[in-house]
Image 1 (cartoon, helix red, strand yellow):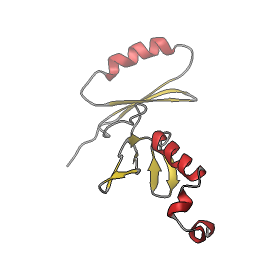
Image 2 (tube, helix red, strand yellow):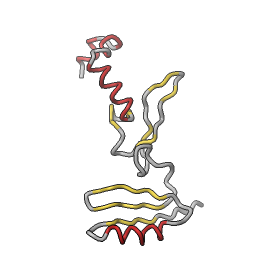
Image 3 (spheres, helix red, strand yellow):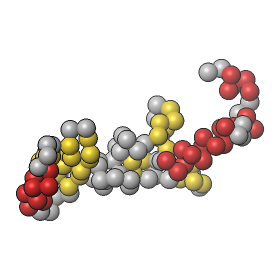
Image 4 (cartoon, one colour):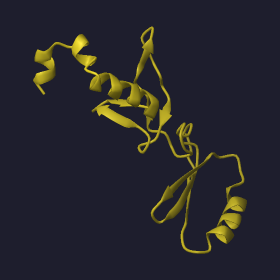
Length: 121
């Protein structure tokens, strides 16, 4: 049986600096700490939820699916905010999304897929 301990902290209001000092004392420990800026303030989550997003310090939910050769993908860790959705089960990191978008925009995709397939959507 695995025991998972989570702690959630949200900083709001004008006294964030004081609250952050107090919060940092609470967050010292062996568990990973994830943080995310929201409209309501900064959300801190402490627990063992895997490696954080490569672009921020929030929980990763996706891996970059961009093919890099030899049947491998980029696998960059991404949270919901940083994952660029290509289709239902395909997400690219920002760098690979730009490469893909430039390829599509430059009509490079028509060299790979016949026009009949592209026009069916």
